[in-house]
Structure formats: C-alpha cells, structure tokens
Image (tube, rainbow, N blue to C red; front, side, top):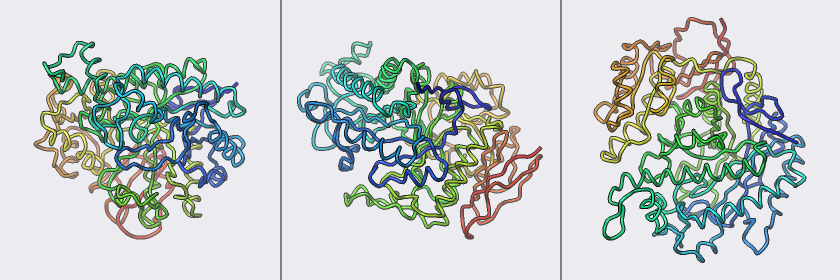
Length: 548
C-alpha cells in the first residue's frame, strides 16, 4: 500500500513516497488529449498531476472559459470514465508514475439553481454560484468528495496515487465566484453567529472585519475538506491546495488572507500558487512568489510552485476576449529558455517543489525545451543529496491582516515592491509576521512591509528597531537604493548592479537585468551548472554550485 508524507530532508520539507525522498519536479496539462506525458517521462519525470472535475462548468466566471472535462457528478450516477482514461493514458506513457490529482470540487450548476439561498448575492457569469459559507454546500461537497476518494482508493490506479490537491472556487484557486469574497445570505448569517454585527438592513457594520471573516471561511473549508481526505485515506497520503496569495491578490475580498489558519492545520501538507504574473513576466526581473514561502517551510509544509511558463508555442485556448491578453503568449525560444531556467532555479535554490503546467497542451513540445527539462529533472534529483537550506541573511515580514484603509499603499508595498526586492541583488526570505519570533535570530537584516501599522508589525519593530520599514512613502525606491539601505544595515551584496540573486547552502543563481553576467564578489568557489545563454540580450540566467 503506497504511502506519502512531508518531512524534513537536507534542510527543507520534502515529499517522501514509501519512505523515500522524491524530487519535487512534476508535469500537468488541462487538455489531457494533448498531453506530453511521454516526453516528460523520457526526460526523467515520474511525478504528475491530472485534472479532475466534479462538474462540467467553467473554471473562470470572468472569462467563461469552456469546460475542458466532463463532470463526474453531472448525471444521476457518478461517471469516472474521463478520470480512468486519463490515468490509463498517463500510465501507458509512464508505468511507474506517481500522481496527485487536482480535484476541482465545485458542484454542478444544477445544484446552485436548486439552492438559491446557498449562493452568492451576485453573479459575475450567467448565474449565481454557491457561497463558501453555505453549510449545505459544504455537506454536499463532502458527500461527493467521499465518493470520489473511495472510488480512486479501490481502483486499479490506487498504487500510483500519492495524494490529492483540493481545488475549488474561481480558477480552482479558492477565489470567490462573485469577486467580493463569496458574499451571500449564508455569509451574513455566519458572520453574525460568529459575533459580527449587522446593520438594521442586515449588512455587516464593519466591512474590514467581514472581509477577514470571509477569508477565514475559505481557509476553514480547505482545512475541513483536507481533514476528510486524510480520514478517508487513513492519513496515508498527502493533501494540498492553492492558497495564501498574500503578495499577489492583496485586495481584502480575495479570500486569501487567512494563511495562518491553513499553516496551522495538521491536515494540509502542501500549499500551491503560480509564479507571479506581475508586469507580464518579462525577462530581466524576478518572477516572485505569490506567497510567504518561508512561512510554509517553517510550518513543515511543502510549497509547490505552479510554473505555467509561457513559451513561443503557447497560444490562447479560444477566441474569447479574455484570452487575447498578451499574457497568454510567450516570448521567443531564446528568452523562454532563460525564463524556464529562472523558474526552475527559484524552486531549486529556495528548496521547494514545482510542476510545469502545460496548460493548454504542447507548450513545451520542442526538442530544445525538453533537453532543458531533462537537465532540470537531473539537477533536481542530484540536489537531494546536499543541503537545500536557505543562505539568505535578510528576512522580509508582512502581515496578511493589513486593512484596506489605503489600498494604493497596500498595492505598492505588498505587490509592486516585489520588483524592487527581486532586483536588489541580495537574497531574502519571506515570512508572515506571526512567525517572527521563531526565526528572528537567523537573520542580520529585517524588512517590514507596512502599508498599514498593525499590532504584529509594531511588535516586530519594538524588538528590532533597526528594521527597514517599507510603506507608501518609500515603496517607490529603486533596487540600487534598496541595496544600499540593506548593506547599511549589515547585509552583504555579491553584485554591484541590479540583478536577481537566489542563494542556498549549495546553490547560487543570478538572472541578469543586463546582457551579461555581472562581476561577482563571493567568498566561495563556483561551478557553473548552466549558463552560456543561447543569444545576447536582456535577461540571462546562470546557476552555480557553490564550492568551499
């Protein structure tokens, strides 16, 4: 009987399967009929995900993207045909594949039409969708999830399934369907029952408190469903979810501001988010994480980055206006290769897992890309034998409970300042404020992202008065200005110019803002792992193994 768990290995939380550490390098596509399973299996990949949908509905209420899978529970009886076919196709290509299905538990539309009181007040698409606060929705979701897990655990594929990723809400990422926090009759009732106050006309009297409550609801649903899966599998398999986009979705209505609740859950083993979409992901800047990766690691959980890296083969999946944005297409092959290197190196050096998300299929169907993918998988495997702990001496702290009293400051400090951080040339780790006391002695320099003055940030400043405070007044500083401020406080910079720098005990990575490798001032030897860009131009990636 297969088992999986997350436990420490060479300095970071690591996926173990049947007692053995597994490199966290995986592949997935939504369009399984366009899969490249064989290509990735030949490149050495053994870890995969497959999409599972309880309903044949759009995954994005804003775009109304057409359903890409039939819904298992659309009819009177469950129909697992699509899941079975996907698993057979994957195992035909990779007989020893290890799989963590992405299970979209959003219910069929007919359930919403039959339960209008359990839905949000407003619709972004053609109809109102279920409200996260609905107990009736939660119970029906648990019933269907139980049926699915029980089916998979007695199926011929049970020996290949190493865990489950529970997805729900808009874009499967636990965003509300109404883009307002999942506000409906049941949300107001639950808020009042929790001690919140309502006005005479039944509306929350404190919008900020209501938004915080709605995030707690979403986080609570994640933990509850994860607990169910843990119980159904006898706690043998890992369970994960998308959540905690603290630095990407900074608005209070995102439902993503109760990360500590998820981190403290014993039932959630891994947490996922895509690489930031900021600034259209150009070369020459850092493509930051959306979440507080080092808090995830501190709490013993595995972070999985979704590397939906666009390539010159990426195309919009349909003609809907939403998909005509340039973000759906990729750069020329030479630039794509440098971004693939950076997305991999971010996971390697920061000691977390990742999957290549071949979203619409065929994005990496190029010999040069697949040769690079094979190098990536080989390096990921080799890295398991050396320390993957961070060597950063700068720690950045943020409070996910910042208010929305100054939304422009929240955006500039929590979201936009990541560009400056990424190019300052000094490695850093990122935590949520409640974790400060656990890690304060590991770092030479503390940076506080403070668009608003919160009790948690005040407490950190009282303990560390020399902390660099980033607020609405100085969030516009340049990378060189930030580098100078950090060095003045005791940080060490290996470069004299703008560059993306990651560092662990074993690895050093640079992504250049210019067209050549800057001079490095390092007290250790370096062995180049990959470099030698394919063409001259802005934004090049270099990975080095540190040698003492």
